[in-house]
Amino acid sequence: MQIEDTKEIPKRTRYYQAMCDSEALNKGEVYYNLKELYIVFLCPEDIFGQGKAVYRFKNLDVDCPKIELGDLCFKNFYIFNKYRDVAEKSIREYLEYFATRNPSSPETKKIDRMVKWYQTDNETRKRYMTWQQEIDIAVDLERQRANDAEKRFFEAKDRADKAEAHASEEKARADEAEARAENAESRADRYEKMLRELGKL
Image (cartoon, rainbow, N blue to C red; front, side, top):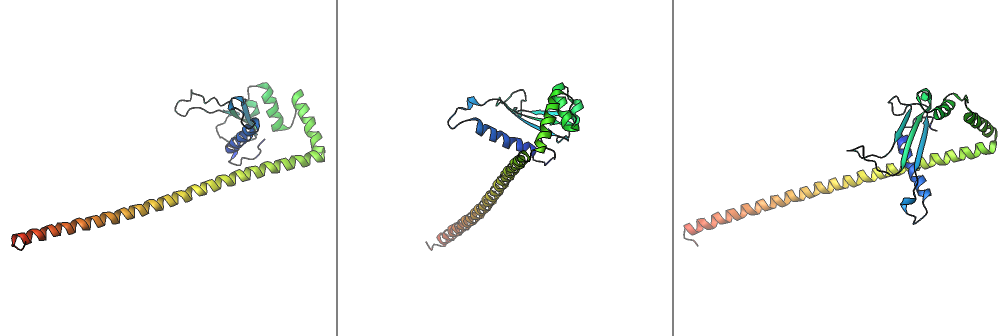
């Protein structure tokens, strides 16, 4: 559940996919054993701004969307403040509970009872806060890694641009030297011709 739009939620789905996949396979295990993976976000507001209650993503070919990658990874976003627009009754009941905190089905009433119990259990609250802190730290580390990678990229690009500029300068100097050599050779040829005409050679 993501209450606040931090402008990084889509990238968090990528991070969560990597975490889940790395835990799903043992070392040396074949990729064929990867199962379907659904990453689900529950958001109060429409972070994509298209007015939909549900957004479902999967990997498709950019030039031909009919072609699916088939990696069995799906990322779904449910905008629970738009629960009235959800067709599936069971999903709508869950989203309504998240939006209103009023349980309207046996399933959501059971969740509501569990939520109230956990809220009164200090040890559970402490574990939850620790878990949330670990997630926040992991996200911050991932963001820092991305920033560092971006910084290294621009530094490498800057070095490449400087090297290219230096190479261009060296080529210009070489071309200039070649032109001077050609001019000197041309003058020598003219001087030799003149001396031959004067009978000096």
